[in-house]
Image 1 (cartoon, rainbow, N blue to C red):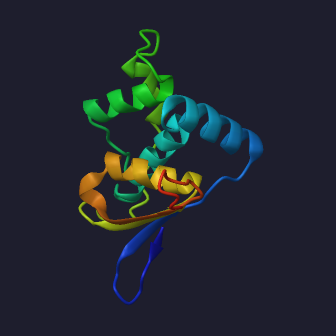
Image 2 (tube, one colour; image 1 turned 45 degrees about the horizontal axis):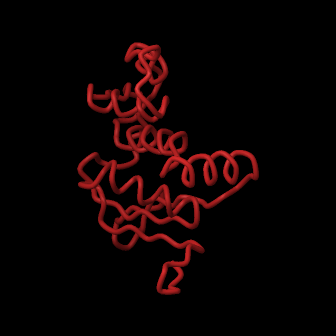
Length: 146
């Protein structure tokens, strides 16, 4: 998370692919190519943003809707063996960092896998987005690269 000292705007910057196993195999191939999006890093990003927008030192609170969404990110499908209690236990120690206000609009930037996560972030927190910037090496049918 970066803050522009002149304008006061915040930008969340998300890196691209880092490791062969975690990013290329698990995130890119298994997550994005096979399932349409990367679940594990999307879940981490969701939790991180909630920490950023929760008052420093306070426990992060999640709505029932958010807990259900996190459950689906953890399992990928309806899994009756993963209960909301399991999700609550997983996030019980999430503590606020108090970096930005929950009502603030931010810029989100990402490259490659980070660009994918920036787009996922914009669907998770649409009211928090000022601009999304992404860059990757995906060619469209028209030959354009973005």
